[in-house]
Length: 157
Image (cartoon, rainbow, N blue to C red; front, side):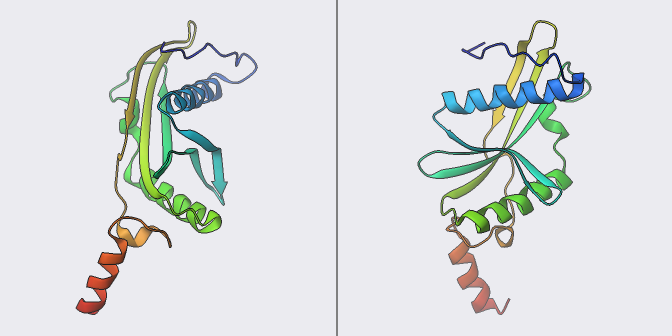
């Protein structure tokens, strides 16, 4: 589908194969959209970001959710508040470590595919899937952060 090739993950457990297939598919999708993949499965402590990709202006922190069938929710709906918070903390660590000055963005890519044929039946890339509180992002040029700090000082926060 859309130039995404079949991959061989026969040696892995089915759950690991599904996740790896989804991450490879999401990586290819982002490349097709003009992103450069910076990291895959980037870890800090016990936290992990599936994909870190960037284009000219933005660094995207991407969570990939892959399912082999549609249960009661679409794959991307499995990203809960706790996962969002963990992504924010991990992204903050990445930004501080790399001194990345690009505007951060949090994306989710949901994928449904058939494991036997590896046919993708659903793919949804949600850009700006959620927005952190401004205090959550480290020392970068995140839009509005400087204005927020200036207003906060005036209000006595």
